[in-house]
Image (cartoon, rainbow, N blue to C red; front, top):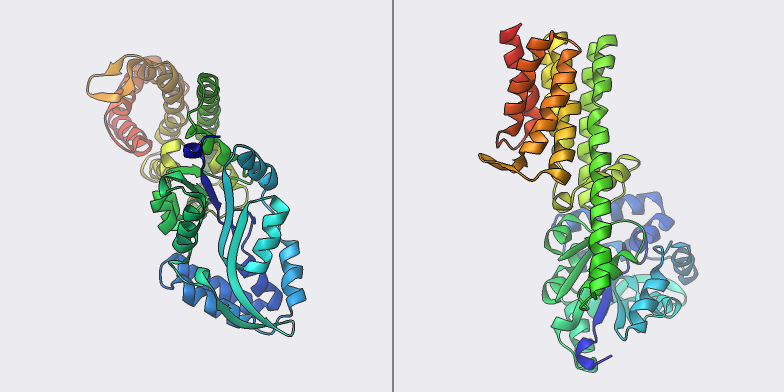
Length: 421
């Protein structure tokens, strides 16, 4: 490989190579109280109430007295992210330099991990151990906030490369300084501060996902670009079908409300709250049982760095329909929202060609699909002439340049129906 193509690929360890945090695992091993303290300290660090030095000092002083063999026992129990070794080997085979750099993992363990994963080098925090007992004292460059920059600059001099040749894969805000200096930054299951700033994002439990972004910067061939576009198109189709499949499930609300109205409202509110918690977890690289997995499958590219509000507005639109309108009108508006709006999105996104003059984000093809399905939904409850009028009004509302049509469609349709019947 020509020298000017050589890159320095830096991997954070906790949360990137390790599927969980070694610091928290140390604390959990030393007792539940220490674990809760460490968890709280990490939260303060995330919200910028603690710097990295204070965080490390407080956590390591809490595990003072642990035997070195206990530290190693916890280390060997850590689960490594899927395909970590294979990913690092593939990067190395292309002539790049791979460095593991962590401000939380002891240097002796980073060296062991570096050898195990066949990385080129590794740097960790210096943890003082006397007579086989952890003293709680820490040191070294990486115990300070500017430590990672200093380590990277040392590597750049050794290999005669620049920050333009650096790729950083990290998850928390302790990596932001080097991410902003590097040419390529990849947030892997990242916390919100990193998610906002990283050039690329990768979520999941497979480190091979970062290869796509590294390879994209290596002047991909036409075949690679073509394969990438095909994969993106296929993923988009599946994503939208899953997303609108959930949208259509709103029809079950009509049935449930007919059985127990109050329980339906309570369930919708509870699901919305749980979803909001799940979104907070997603935006901070934390796995949320079941719901978090579903969200990752459905979230659009533009929503990967921000809160996905669509499910909240959907729930709000349904709740308002149930609370403001009689049962018949609520059923019609929810059915139109669930089915017609879903079909309009799918048809408009993948087949829409003719843009609506007053709303270029939507197409005539999508609106036509909405009109047909809305008419079918309304005709189940209303005479055909009335159903046609309602579907036309609802279609016009859907076509308007309103940000949250999950609310405007049911409210607008419901208000019109209230005047009509």
